Length: 156
Image 1 (cartoon, rainbow, N blue to C red):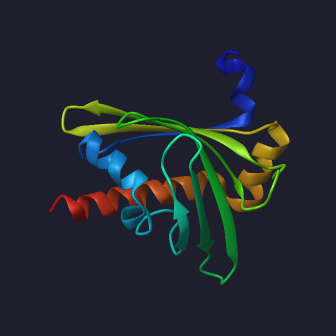
Image 2: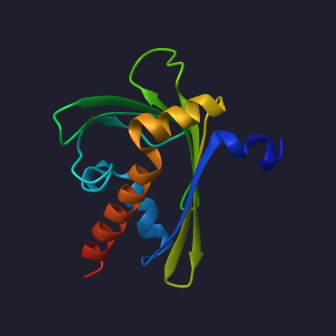
Image 3: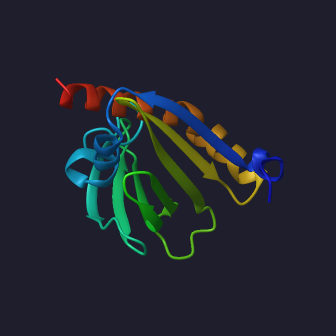
């Protein structure tokens, strides 16, 4: 399947992060780091488990600033440290019909990291729903800003 076959079903974001690839990967895969930056502005997280290995599960609740809780479940498919994460992401329910696939790559560029995240949905309608209902594009932008801010504080 080429990219034109999936373009209407995906959300992709690329950022140049001012931190070395190994550190960026660590901050993505260790709960003691993730808890400080994951999610849009104003969100906090309760992490119930995070086992970063193929078949491993990350269960967490995102707490919205409006008091709404969003139970999440990620199942890791492939991990190539420090360059690749592949996982399915959905609600913390069995057989979630809205589950989607995520690929995150970490490319070293000198002392920085090019981070590329691609979310692939089962349909254009599902993609459009997360954009319209949950503000996924702006939410991803805010999450990446929080990641950069957290990393800049670590690098000081």
